[in-house]
Amino acid sequence: MASTPMDLDVPDSSSPANGTVGTPSTTLNITRTLGSGLPSTSAVADAIANFRPTKLFRRDDIKDGRPQPYILSLDYDDPGELLMTSESDETIQIYKVRDGRHDKQLLSKKYGVKLAKFTHNSSSIIYASTKQNDAIRYLTTHDNAFIRYFEGHTAPVTCLAMHPGNDDFISCSKDNTIRLWNAGTKNETGVLYIGTPHLAAFDPSGQVFAVGSPSSGTILLYDHRNFDKAPFAEFDIVAAGGPIDPTNVMQGWTKLEFANDGRSILLGTKGGGHFLLDSFDGSLKAYLRKSEGGCNRLAAGEEYTMNGGGPNGANIEGSGDCCFTHDGRFVIGGTKKGVVVWDTLGNTSEKVLEPVHILEDEKPAAVVAINPRFNFFATADQDLVFWLPDPHA
Image 1 (cartoon, helix red, strand yellow):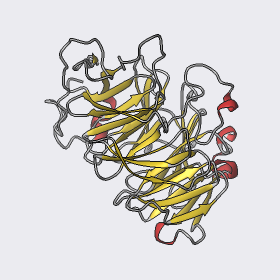
Image 2 (cartoon, helix red, strand yellow):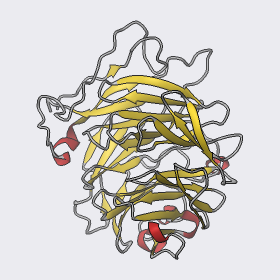
Image 3 (cartoon, one colour):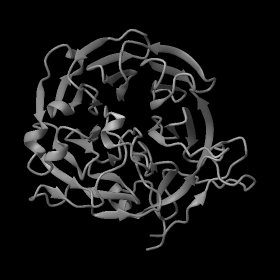
Image 4 (tube, helix red, strand yellow):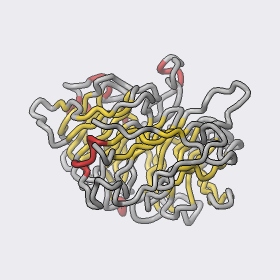
């Protein structure tokens, strides 16, 4: 099968996320047509096996023997035109997806940065602090100015989840609280006290949100409009997943996400696989086995000392190495060399799914995010990689 060559990105020298200075930048020119060989309405199922690593971004502003920073999170704006990273050297990098180039760098040296998320305005973002305090910061990217701080958490934030339809968002923290916010006001709109509420996610309608509590081995579902009431559902992950993966039913959780059809919940782990759950009754649909085992990133809320301070990013936080595709059918998962793809419609009689496609790359994929509008996804560890379907495959 033909492979799309990977270009090392090399725009002008003002951009820190480049390769060799002086070589003109190539552009991806991503359109909804997705290349000459693919129709504009190309189904995910028709393209998923043909994704190739197409463009590599490496920071060239890291000098004086300093190590390359780690990419902690990936996020897209609503139109899918911009991709944002938060990085371990306390910077935010923004890329133009269709042009395949780095756009700008923002610094957060005073407060640190992780879990950077676009609001529904492509020039406004929120992110969690890593030093000074545990506030969430609301920033405009066009002038790098703070709009406001969201203060209240007394321990590090472990997850930020944006509402799909407005500027409400949820923050999770190691202070055992979930806080609900609206970007228009500095005061929280609600607080929930839950043990280890390290992950949260909205369903596609925005009417329901889920909270993952690893220490209790449960996922709690709340009505967003009546969040002060008890959860209307409580899914027991120990009962659902314990027979298959007892090690990671109460620890090592890295990602919580609803499929776009609202029928499934993905619970990512740093262990040997991910849990695919029925969003209505919490039953295990399938265990998505990772052929190469777990990732090197910390789980949400995990202490740095828990995994021994090992090499290769073992003490680095992340935003999850798995995600659903747009149609909710496939799950993309990162590995030490590229990504794997699971088909959730595969035979799950054994409750275990092996990958149906292996998309190889030389770079590890410790963080993974799919574009909300285009057949395009990105992976990252210390370098950022853009993936596109090969039109010649």
